Length: 154
Image (cartoon, rainbow, N blue to C red; front, side):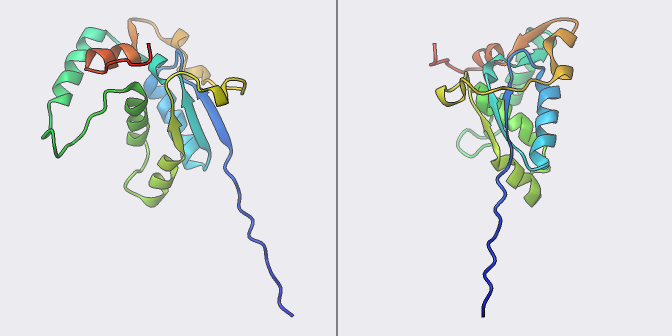
């Protein structure tokens, strides 16, 4: 008599994060922790995430960074806000280890809010709110247009 055991496939918990008026670095560190803990994270409104500081200095810094590398062989630096934010989270994960790579595969980033996520509850982190920031700030969408992204959504 043979016993059959059914493997229990555990589906990860899905967390929807609203990036609107969230400080990029603080938000991405929280998201990296969620990913490492096995959750699937979907970031919405990526172009509305916020950087602290003056836009002029950050744009000059970004232009210097973008000049590095051979155009055909890389390294490739993304200009789209969703890809930029995704790569920021990747920098906070142990990506060269298997657990970091599997965690990175559980991350999805969207500009705006797709129709399938409109009516669902979204999370925003209280310690990454724009209201906690004193001083100048600008959005990821503004930075992306300054470094060469052509917004085709408008």
